[in-house]
Image (cartoon, rainbow, N blue to C red; front, side, top):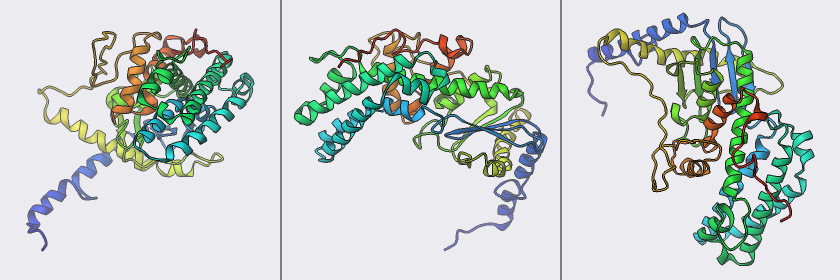
Amino acid sequence: MPTPESPELIRLFTTYTANADSIGRHWAAAVAERDRGAPLVVATSADIALYPGGGRPPTVEGFRISPRGFKELTGISHLGPAVASLVAIRALGASSWRADAERLLAEVKATRAANSVELWRDIIAVQAYRGREQEIADMVDYSCAVTARYLTTGLANEDYLTPETLRSEYLAGGGETELPVPINHMMVATFFLAGLDISFRITRWLRSQHIDWERAMVVIAGQQGRPTAGVTWNTSSVATTILGASDHRLPLERLYVAPHAPTFRTPADGDLTEVIALEERLRGIWSGTRATVELGAMMFDGYPRYTPSGVRFPDVSDTTVTEVSEMPIIRSADDIRAMVTRLRVVLEDPRQLLSGCVTDFAVASLAAAGHDPTRVVVPGLTGVHYPTDL
């Protein structure tokens, strides 16, 4: 049976909301018209678009997946969780672990054979990595060698593949097998390098656009990682990067994370048709959200106002700390305990983006170095010797 309703009261309800011709929609449309000339920055999971406003055409810059070097470096980053997944699969008694281990071993050996200074310097050629190609090549060689050694031992004796040996013989060290550099350090270094490159490119691009950040409308649109991840200011590495690129002139309250907003695909061959077609909808999302926000000061002047709080990071320099509910603060490039703790947090906290574990530190480090990536100390890489004779 249909739900009993009062037509008169339903009409009153739809007069303000849930209606294309409602007062609420009219207010949102008025805000959108007021801000039509303001710059709109929209970040998807792979690209950032700038709509300058006033009907001018957008421009787009890729920052993840499509740029050179991202997939290659991320493949090395993923060695840790890939090996851990094999140990976990085997512990569950699933037979697929062996075929997966053999496949991973073959790819690791092929990667080690293909890896070279020339590959990173002349072919991949990431500008933010200039001058570090030898260090990166050595780190990749070492990581592949240690991974191959662990997998080979495990394939010969599957009882070797345990959480204990995973940690002591591969990730952290301290076991019977010599481990000159823990793989944990490599994961910190590769995640940092990825964040450094993204921050360098996006900051350079956004600064070249001469955006009026005090007027800017910013939307982080669509799914950024796991369905539960990156949906708040504090957990979005994309938000961190944009805020850093603005030299924190972008007011935090003008940045909205909209996981259900429509997104565009990475433009192919310079075709911006899809990007252009979404401008009105994306402006409408920002303006509709802003319209509700602006009612607060008018309706409730004299009551305490809402203000976005900064990120409060716990401190894990005290080794007695055994639990955290947020990402811990990183005090320096030598603070490996905090950074490895972050590796754990991004796995266990579904709010976090897996790739964002040290992005904020990379953004801050780049800013402190005057936006010169050659002056940045890369934790887990700078000053670390990765032997290549294993």
